[in-house]
Length: 109
Image (cartoon, rainbow, N blue to C red; front, side):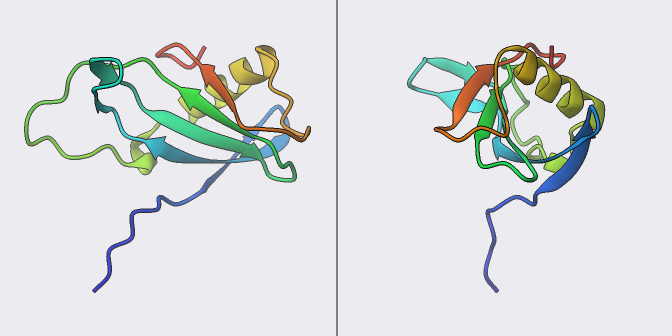
């Protein structure tokens, strides 16, 4: 049996526009910054071409042996607020170009 590591895409509507998002990165230890990194979501307008990576700050360190975060456990209200704040920060989802990385607050703002 093969194991898939790709997470599923989820659809969400923000301000009447359809978006698709997925969990890109689990909260984890990073040797690059010598500390914990928070989760990251990849977001794209359903009809657009430009992705945005929404990086959240690290939360409390998970206990040893704790189960991994699943995309289905992330609150839709948090994703909506993070997408809205990314647009307010200047992300143009219907434009073309490279992927934009936007750091959001823990509550998505």
